[in-house]
Image 1 (cartoon, rainbow, N blue to C red):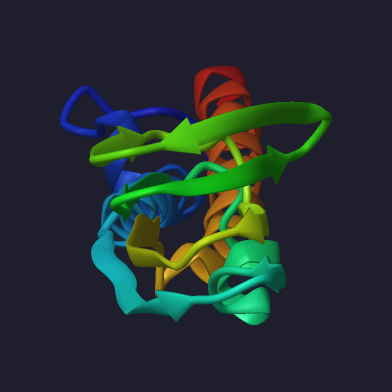
Image 2 (cartoon, rainbow, N blue to C red):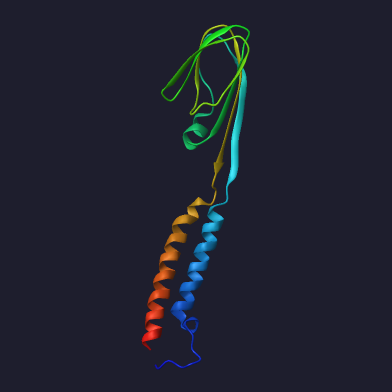
Length: 153
């Protein structure tokens, strides 16, 4: 079918459908970037012994959480561990730490009060990334092939 002067690439159905798929993929990608803040706080008192502080499920699911550990005691000896870091501490007041992972505390002597906060981001619509990628690739192929066929007449 010869090309008429009034025809544009958008009048050819593969090009139009391809652009619709690309716009839909872009919208799905934007929705997939929506994030919500999640976190928890736990507090209490520790006597002599070994304690792992925090929620194991949360800590395993959120690698890049923002963690704050506040400790206070009048006179306690303890060791704080997270990852491969190990910190011995003689605590006679308050201290605030920013652990890089879920902390474990071994109280050697005394009593220690603690408050642990962990916050992170959750992307509830992240599963839209794969369909958006498929739509984007399909739309791009349709636009390219459709335009080539349109120009070829």
